[in-house]
Every structure is written in structure tokens, then in C-alpha cells.
Image (cartoon, rainbow, N blue to C red):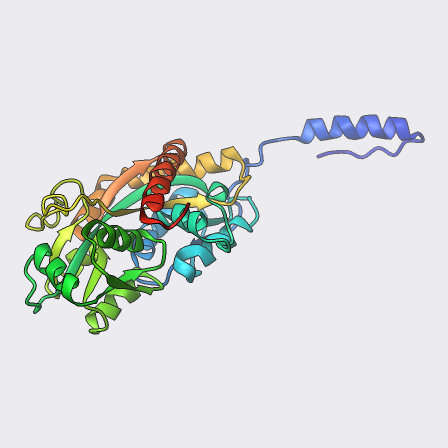
Length: 322
């Protein structure tokens, strides 16, 4: 217990105060976590970020010995949630799902995003989902060539999650590479995008790999954006195999507010990576159509930096930025 001594001179008080501070100093992470952690999802319920957070929730609570409260802050393709993230206290009690390329593309293309890529402090990346193009199961289009031929003669509408997201980028790249005019119909999240498509509101959809797996009886999948044959959908060709130089994927992880203490980040990083490397978790992810990933904070930052350079070149080629 720190004792306070009342002395007669200001000098003595100052000396004792300094000494007392030095004696009681300790790591800010000594008692972390000491309250409920809010795990914010910047999209609506039911999407990939939510599915993974729900899988992680009981494991996080067990390993961190605290409650974890999952909340949703949807809007503007995730930008509303990431704007909230960068304004929160850097005490480790508020964490947020993060999506790549969203957190790179949005600040790069918009003046009023509300956050900068550099403000997103990555903890780990734990999941990937290649993006595929699908049409209704009863469509007369059988191949990507069929789709592109039809798109060259009439304006096709494509459902996707958010603007300046992985889906939006795939749409822009396909339109540019194949010189076809299409219309992109954004939704607030992947779950809404799928329902929009299943409701007959669009001709096609750019969807995440796990949605392609879950709805494969309702979708006719024309191509997928993985670099190689996707394990969960072995009969689906890649865009490259169909003659289109396109890869497309969304990577997901978790982030904390800027200036969060490194020791707190380390605790969270260790916990998320322990979950990500769990064989049973990985098996579940593969069965559901996800790609398991396990990048630590440093690797995640290097990956974000690498993708930032890559996407800047892509957006310049597409005429989205100067």
C-alpha cells in the first residue's frame, strides 16, 4: 500500500511523490482483462465475420477468463464500425473484426471514410474466403463465357457486400478486364447480399466461399477467385482457368484502437492465434468453406502494407484514384 506523508515543505513532498510513483509502477497489462470485452462486428448478423466471432466467443472467454460481448455496427461496407473502433479507448476492452481489402480500399477512395488504414491496429488475421461469381441454379448460363457473352449484350446486375470491398473490387476488375458494362448492387453485409440475390433482385452475385458452399444447391457457380482449385468446391474452375486474370478474396482478422499497449496486443494475439491454430477449429472452417489463416500482429501489418501497395496500383489502373 502506498503511504502518503504530509511534510512541511513542497520540495520534500515532490521527492516523495516521485519516489512513490516509481515504487508503484507496473505493467498496464498486469490485470488485463479485468472487465467484459466488447467484440464489435462492422457488419450485420449472419455474415462471415459474425460466424467466426461466434465460434471464437466461448474459447476467448475461457482463455481470457472474462465475458465477451459481440455487438454489431453495420453501415458503409464496414466503415461505420471501423470509425467507431479508432475512436475507442486503447485499453483492450474494445476489439473489432477487420476485413481486407475493405480497410485499405475505403480510405484510399473516399474523403469521408471516418478512419485511416494506419489507425487500424491489427492483432491477428485468422480467416480467408475466396470470392466466386454465381448465377441462379436454374439459369441458362453454364460457364463464365456464357455470362460474359450475355453481359456484353445486356446490362447485368450483380449483388455484393459493401462498396470498395472485396466484392466491389472483384466486380470492377471483371468489368475492366472483360470490357463489359454491369451494375453493382451493394448490401450492408454478405448475408443481406445473398438474400438479395436469392430473392431474385439481381442477375448474379459475387459471394464468399462459405456462402458458395452453403448455398451450392441454389447457386450455379461459374468461377472462383482462388489461385488454385478451392478444396471445398473442387469442380468449380478458377477465373484464371477460365482465361480471366483475376484473383479475389477477403481476409478477416481482429484489430484494436490505435495506441493500444503492446503487451495487451500480445495477450490478444496469443489468444486468437491459439484458437486459429486449433485443429478442430480449422477442420470446422474448412468444412464450412473458409480458409484457415494464422498471422500474428507483425505478419498482419506486413500483409496490409503489401496489399496497400498492390491495391493502389489496381485502383489507378481502374481509374478510381489518380
